[in-house]
Image 1 (cartoon, rainbow, N blue to C red):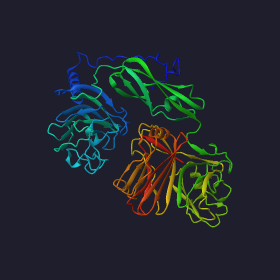
Image 2: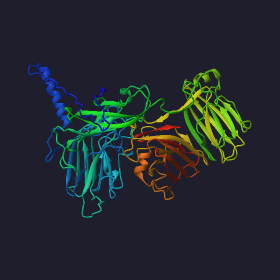
Image 3: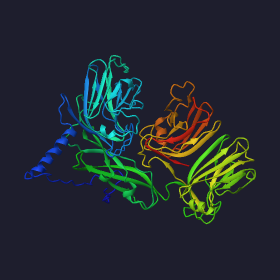
Image 4: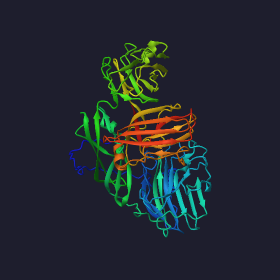
Length: 640
């Protein structure tokens, strides 16, 4: 990665004076090479020609561009090919190199072809026939859509689950054929090793608003892979892209961290940043950080908001060119996560508190954090304060070490599994803690702490039946005693590159008649509404009831076709909502009503506006067998 200090920095991106030099390499083989070396060269050349696809198909035109990040980080629905329009009675043939991540562990990490009507994605009249993915898993989700009949698909490579080995067999030069010449729809995907077909003899339903227009469109979507397009027999919307070299026109930055810890080197802070460079003829390419030049303005040393300036100065083929510039904001901070107490554990007892959080009647509020301690005494750890809204009434204060006080404490039973106290105390420095604060709604409350020590052992502490609690005025906060806590439980990569379903929080049981609530910060790259958190509802064996997103959408047996399901209908301004979801404070509450589940979501955006999304009546569900967890889609969550 280059980190040359830029000679001149102008906020209007006047870094165009920067130039990077190219280099030329010598010939690999000389004409005087020995026979065995020449033979080896010919073998390599032949293999390369086979992989790159030098066979000639009538009507094939060059269409050379790349779809997806070359570091295999592209998530689902993040990058798309051009649109290719196929009229009734026509056939489309395309060729491309499909690059499979050598470390891919899921069968779906390849590509899918989406078939839609003659409209752009996002247009009011846009409709999809469905998708056909290259892998074939009859029991999975390798084809989908209202107008795709999965029984018509077949392949000579069948996967039983999406974690089977063999996805590497899908790589190489792929020839894709979409044939409408017989009145139906025949799709063939083959690389000479694996061939998948979809053979529909019946005519396609016309989804176009104009009934006289029978044209469909096809486009490709990679996931965890990338596509090097080679050619097409049909000219796409926007035209063909030739192999001629192309100059860079503009650039945008991806995965720029919002926060950088003070003292972090520039190279380390932005090692995972990529850039999408737009070249002539509508071609784009994802550029890795090592090929970019970075500068932080005004510096990386002081705290506060900064500007990252990046430059790229190469053509599409890597020759020297006039640089293009992109900028992004970030902040240098002295701590990455919300914490309570000084990080050197010098905060005295009661010297720092988290904010008060309300726990409604029948609700359990779940919090996760890391506990750090001076390690002098058992009480030098976190405490939970159960109180009224203004803090004027303390129902109880309970510690991590089987001790507490307050008006409601004497009535409770308290027990823990610490065993040897010295071992427990040593294990509490860096312990991962989950607390469960329950308002029983009858004037009592329960507090449970599960502590996974730095020794890998699990310790628990329960305070059951704290009384004198006003069920309508029940709050809690955390305080410390020569210790500190950090809310640093993170789900998903902090550069928001984790693809959909790529990371999950822990499962939490939701008892019948109870509500379980979690709160977290949602961070997103924000290209699409779905690039935010999802709530997953399952049985204990992980069988799904439903998955619901932040943006008024979901799926699953308890969601699809459910006439009793009521949603809040989404947001008034989706653009404003999506922009506000980066660093939004989110509270998710899941209520188990016995045969159904309600999900209520409150999102306080970075604009200070409160957004709500409800999913009421997800059913049917098994009474005492409901679990909840969170997953991500090109976003990450920090739990509070």
